[in-house]
Amino acid sequence: MKKEEVVATKVKYETLIIDHVKYKTTLTNKYNARKPYAEIVPGVMKAFIPGTITEVYVVAGQKVEEGDPLVVLEAMKMLNEIRAPFSGEVKVLNVEKGQRVVKNQVLVEISF
Image 1 (tube, helix red, strand yellow):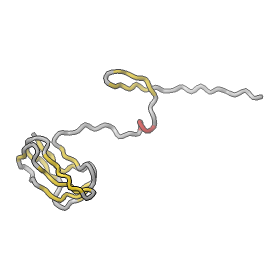
Image 2 (image 1 turned 90 degrees about the vertical axis):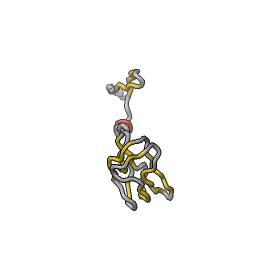
Image 3 (image 1 turned 180 degrees about the vertical axis):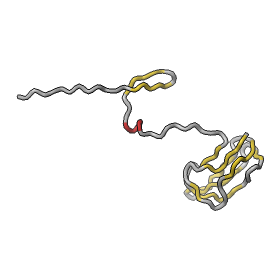
Image 4 (image 1 turned 90 degrees about the horizontal axis):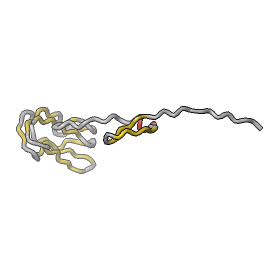
């Protein structure tokens, strides 16, 4: 009968803070490989899905009111109207009618 060696492995615990409470835990490879959190920048409208710009209602320098339509993004046979989240001025218009866009591409920037 052979004696089996028990190999002690030291587990590395990480501190995870949730709502100001510290937890000691191990983290999975999937968690470690995730994309870092990026804060939402107010006034920057991005394409939430790849598609085609079918209409452009504004130009750079134009004043807009909250709820005004900015552009229409056609994706998966649906027309998605991107509207101004607040009143302000169109700082940058990065698209034109007929242009194909990718996910997370900046379409319009508004300054308030």
